Amino acid sequence: MHHPTSLPKIAGFASIFIGVVTAAFSFISKSSEAAIYIGAAGVMLCVASVIIARKNIDELQMAIAGLFLSIVATGIGIWQMYNL
Image (cartoon, rainbow, N blue to C red; front, side, top):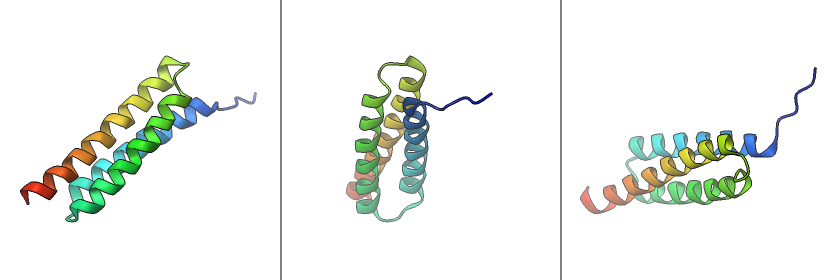
């Protein structure tokens, strides 16, 4: 039986993926500007994902988790800029 995947579910998974990649990059990167830019782009994409997934609580939770990770990545980049 064919089970179609909905757009909010894809957006939630994409948000988690973007959040994890941006957080990992900001920890690994020595360039604080790159971590800030990629983290900010991750925040923008995750906000779009939250808007898409706002109808279903399961997908919304994934999108919020990705948004949190992207915000953490941006914060790490800002911390690196001013402290290193």
